[in-house]
Length: 323
Image (cartoon, rainbow, N blue to C red; front, side, top):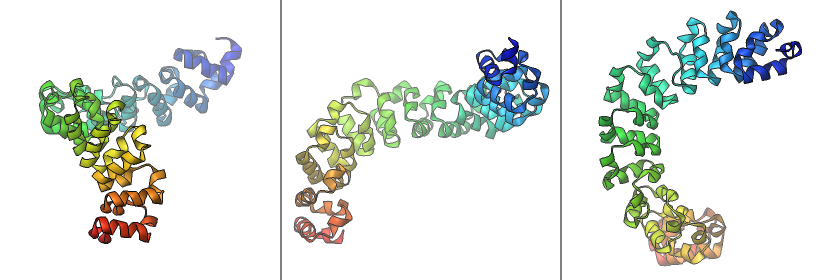
């Protein structure tokens, strides 16, 4: 390393960033400079292997190194290698970090590690990997951990649902037979709409399946193709089940006042989900309560005190006066 590079902080940092071992050749003044070392390992964690010993005992420096590269944990002082916070930070970056075996025996540490990196389940002792209650706790913290469980657990109904509640993408790791079971799929979608892209492809365009899914969780419709969300009849049926489904409609339907009034007629709750410009339009709100007096409950407060709108709602639904 050229002498001018060895002494220039920015040049030295750039060199270490490219090749961590370049730390060996940095000028001694910089190698003794704690601020420089902290910056260097933050850019190249592996450079910790080449810093003076006193810095490998420095918790802040070691933490910065492992947050960049978990493998750097191997170069930390022994007492920091068994420090929970440092070890967890290393695992979060690289599951192969040299975490002391004693830490993996600690249930709380193991669960915290899985929460940060689902693959950490494979580093856990076998008695944890075979412990259903441990696995249940693990997937509640990180649903993606389901993919690292033994196959038998991927058919465990409550365990798989716990994983999906945390992470909808976990559905792809459920047992194949479960992924073909419509009842299970509906249950999964009721917990997490983000699971929809992972149901079998033949169901993505199955109107009856999607309608049943919307009944349990209207947000599931946000995941379907726009062609379906632009289907007036289907979306009206979905809104009839849950007013919130209106929020999932394609833009062309949300811009159509006639459709929106049909939606309110099908389900008063839909008024709460019409675009703001319609909700703020007194003529539209009046038309809405003409269609469905119960919609008064979902109108903006200003319109709920407007005599003409209230009287119209009462004519359509006398009990609207109690809303």
